[in-house]
Length: 449
Image (cartoon, rainbow, N blue to C red; front, side):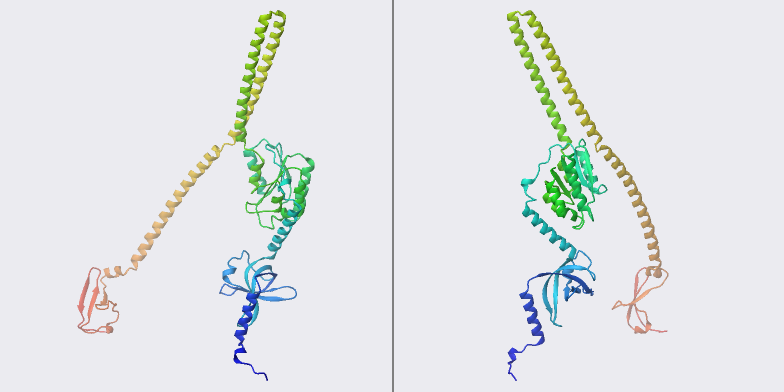
């Protein structure tokens, strides 16, 4: 039999503690994927469960401080992705995982697929700025690839009508999520490229989860965008959303409305530019007329010096014709500019927010009257309830009892209410509270019932 010193002998708790410290210090924070089972939620707020696959399982604990950050409801049978550290539960010596973070496995897989595809396409050069096309300053026709029933198309049309209603809009209807969405989006991009009827394309949809936006993270959509010869603007989701389509498109907009604002100019700016150009055209015309007049004076002087009557008549006729043509051309151009200016002013007046403000002011006034009536009714009802409660309280008030001739007797020293004659002795000092005032007395005799 071997002789072992007491220093070499470990207790069970010492052994489990050493094993726990060894595991926690030797293994880093790890990611584990599996299926939830044996889920338990005690009153402490912690979560205990097993994580398993088809060949093994491991016990897990997720304490309340960590599970407060959960964005979904864990349940048995759910496939999850965990970030955890390996440990041992010392009282039982059970090997377990202490979970710091839990997410549904589908989200984790989609994020990994997103990063892998992003890295692959970036290596191929699909995101390079040298491939990006410049958007037209004033588009003749705008193409929109989105769902015809979604909120995105309504937002885009609203912005385009407000900023630049002159450009026609071509809708290429597609599904923007679910089965078949990526095929329809790719086909719409190819159709727009083949028809070549638009000089800019908006690819858009509203916000959603990573799964909802996944059609815009598909490789086929990215390659169709890259191959499209028409400048493209991606307006997918909200500002915080980011997709592969945003990286491949020539311009990325934070929202569908933002994409519409990017592709068209503001008609107010165009109106100011038109007015500026009209002024410049008028000045140029005046300069031409002045130059023609100066030329006429010079020719007249030359003719006057040489007296060529016939030549002078022909030149005078030519000058009259040129002057008439010049004036007619100037008046025609000026009429065109005035007509364009009237059209722009008419469109601007039609889009004025004054009528909407008046309607909303009327609604506000009606709402204020309703609010005042409701507040008055609530106050009247509260006053009635208060009066009833006050009457009920008065009915049970001890002061009303005192008014009927009763008194409240208490010990003069302690102030305790006297309810039993046997608790009072002869010569004890007592105090009686009446409806008005108090009496002090000395007991000279007691008579218990």
